[in-house]
Image (cartoon, rainbow, N blue to C red):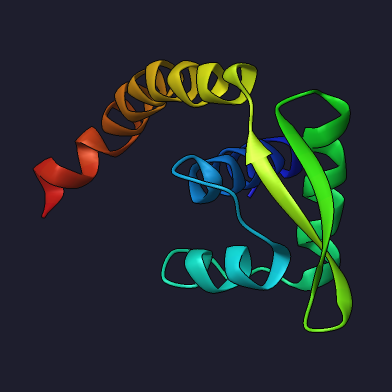
Amino acid sequence: MDVQLKRGLLDVCVLAAIKNGESYGYKIIKDLKPCIELSESTLYTVLKRLEAAELLTVRTAEHGGRLRKYYRITEAGIARIGEFKKEWQEIMSIYRFVTKEDDVND
């Protein structure tokens, strides 16, 4: 898969995982597991990129004697999910065009 496309998909997946409430790294990985395998190192790279783009905010709090980072989606992050949904319609249209001959030959 194209690296840029995959990067964009990962970003939106992480945003979707936290759109209903604050979350933290391990829970995000667990919540995404049904649709995509994501390593901790990849997740934290995505989270830093999303924070830099102001698509999420982060706060640190103590949990079980350790500091844990909690992530919350911003209005810009919610808007990004909406943009993705519109873009996805175009991607699906391209997919149907590319696979149209496959349907005829099956």
